Length: 100
Image 1 (cartoon, one colour):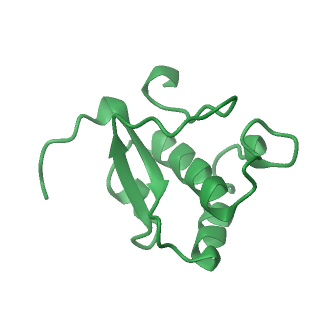
Image 2 (cartoon, one colour):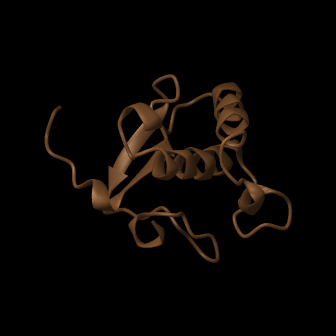
């Protein structure tokens, strides 16, 4: 819908049913534009080492750096904008409102 979204507290994550192939292409695209070192081996967000987690991190970073618009979370319709549920976990911080 067109409900007003509080863009101050939103993140972009990969939709649960997204194929690994599309997730990888999202990672490849986003990581050309943003710093994906946290999802590289040894980085704070490397584990769990799954395409879903890595893609969500990269997609969110791209989204945060590109105006937090629906278009910057589209990723061939595989992105999902979430509000309130900060996807950060453990030592892995998803950049969000506080870091901008």
